[in-house]
Image (cartoon, rainbow, N blue to C red; front, side):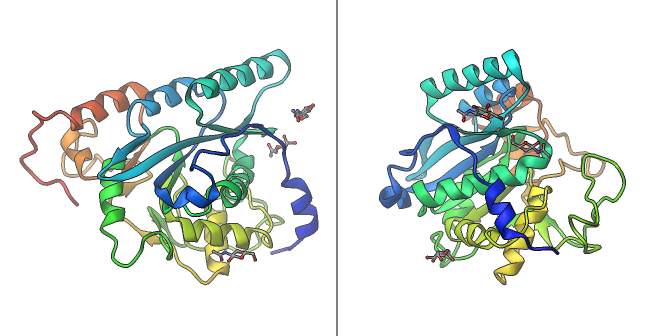
Length: 299
Ligand SMILES: *[C@@H]1O[C@H](CO)[C@@H](O)[C@H](O)[C@H]1NC(C)=O
Ligand SMILES: *[C@@H]1O[C@H](CO)[C@@H](O)[C@H](O)[C@H]1NC(C)=O
Ligand SMILES: *[C@@H]1O[C@H](CO)[C@@H](O)[C@H](O)[C@H]1NC(C)=O
């Protein structure tokens, strides 16, 4: 690992184009936010954001506590198309007040940068949020279950360590050309430290701030979820596995699991990759009072 903090710090600052400084009611009130949904979304994904706003990411009081929502975004394309997409975000933002946008190019390799810019924002505007869901805009997150799970944690109101999701241990950096390519110069070790899949993981506000602190002295690795693992490790903390998080999607080959069956999703916390139309239907079906699930699908 090469550490070149000066240069990295220099590359980490990008002006905000859209902000919601009062999302958590101000830094001092932010402990009122129980679950902050932090959703990575590229400007072009308008339809995903729209569906999320009226399904699992709806801002609401759930079981007596508050859920708040933020989409985090950069810019994309160039020229007129970039301007159009920026205008789109601006319009959505004026209606929903739920977008943080920075002036950097929203690419896969810049995801880590996006995460760190968010944490910097959080330290400033929402340092005491109890818990966060950090994930992609194409997941199905059962936020009702998440609140229940988090409320059931013994001895942790967000002020202690929590980082859980689909745990990856012993993952090997991809050394050949692909989306996930990581050159030796960027990450020397043959294995990544344990981390949770970036599709969606839950963490406490405390752990988010620890990660932010650690990130100050760790070179940005472009694979954002693996980078989180490096920050945790440096702080002497470990990510954990939660069986309810299926960040790689559901394994539908065994047990005759139907991924569109609402009963399957009633008990899970998060499943990766859903077309928006399915997500909309599924969220409504699991809330149908007439839905009857006979067999427990908890695995
Ligand atoms: C955003 O960045 C571009 C260069 O990538 C620059 O031309 C533009 O002025 C910046 N806009 C703002 C508002 O900072
Ligand atoms: C990350 O964003 C910066 C600023 O917009 C841009 O110059 C750079 O090319 C992006 N990096 C990647 C790998 O896309
Ligand atoms: C992060 O660092 C700041 C400044 O050094 C410190 O005040 C704060 O307690 C740290 N937060 C955590 C959660 O470690």
